[in-house]
Length: 210
Image (cartoon, rainbow, N blue to C red; front, side):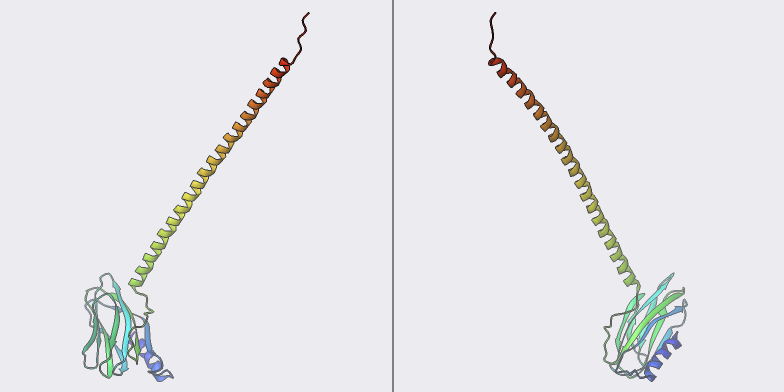
């Protein structure tokens, strides 16, 4: 893994891409770090004073524990990280070759993944393209939140459908009662009209006495 990343950077240096035209990058490097083993160190290309180094790393295994250090040509520690997942941020103070070293803190094997960028302007605030455990946790939290919101919307829709059905049934029942009431009123009015006509007819009828 060290040679792979080194040749990638070497090709960029030898080619048309210069230090000042584009930041060099080494992305998506994975390697196994045995338990209680000697530090694994990656030798970076020659850095000028003021060059920025930025990146991310993550250790994964049955037990997790790693010490990450960025060393200058005099083996002075420019940056160190003790978390299992972290960001690398440092600016070169001396010219020369620097080293990025990974020391295991556990007695079991771990898989270490990392990426980094080198920028001649000293920039160290790149948006990290490397997906870490924190990223997946945030995505999981967002997915759970979206799922909960979707369930809430579904429950609201179901409640609205149920309420609309209840109101429709109530309205239909009321309309049916009003219809039968109207029919009863018509029947009663017709009966009263018949009684009145009969009474008036009998009132004006001429009675003949034999």
